[in-house]
Image (cartoon, rainbow, N blue to C red; front, side, top):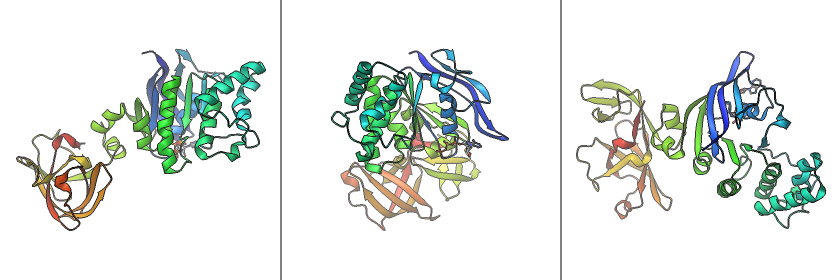
Length: 350
Ligand code: ATP
């Protein structure tokens, strides 16, 4: 697959503060690439360099093999959708979507055709004359995307575009966005601090922390094989166990669990255990696996899984456990003391 975007050692310094540090990556033509990281890690700064709104301190950006060095934003084959959407409130839907094309002084017939086609693609036919202030949050979102896509950018940059929507609409819009991207075949670069958005929509996700990329991978690999402690903690839910002691064939964690060293990656400092890595005794075979007593604090059933928060008996640490939907677990209740084991495949050491 050909690369539409290549970023090499991109760095941005604001006086003595380095917001983006030697970031390198490339994006496949037609891909959905997300940059995921906490607030302030440098996502927006990176996006602004790609769009040309700010100039990099070092490094290079190539789009379809062409260096973007010295090319102003309006001449880059990219378009940006902001969290604020930045729609024109006095204009109707059609005028908002037509705005960029009119500025290019295209013939009216071409503008009309392209706007009608794009509104159909985002399911907004019949809304042409409505003011954007009369639309729902999700509809406004679609207008903003249509307004950018109608310009036929090679790459659409999306800066937390679902951030202002309520949770239910966000859930819906992330599936819609993914379908739209697949249908149009436009390359999307999407920045977010919401791991579920990144995991659901993307082909590839870069996890960013303090200006650097910690890992670039498929959503499944990020979850299954996080390369760093930061990724393990940031992507998906985990129980974090810090190491206290090593003695012979065992390690002891600060919450008092003794684990057999055999089978663990190496001498860890910190362990991350996914909630689904726990095996509940005595209904399952725990032979040869390290066991701990926990007291059930809450049991939450969400349809497909039973989520249990439990207090680890010796240390009092709260442990999050997720059990598959299974008749064997139906009788679990608050206050029960149960024995749990850990599936070592789902335990990551750093
Ligand atoms: P958020 O998710 O909160 O938008 P972000 O990951 O997009 O965060 P950036 O906006 O890229 O983060 O900011 C990264 C860091 O660079 C922050 O510490 C910010 O304060 C700093 N920064 C951004 N722009 C400037 C600027 N113009 N001058 C100085 N520092 C800046």
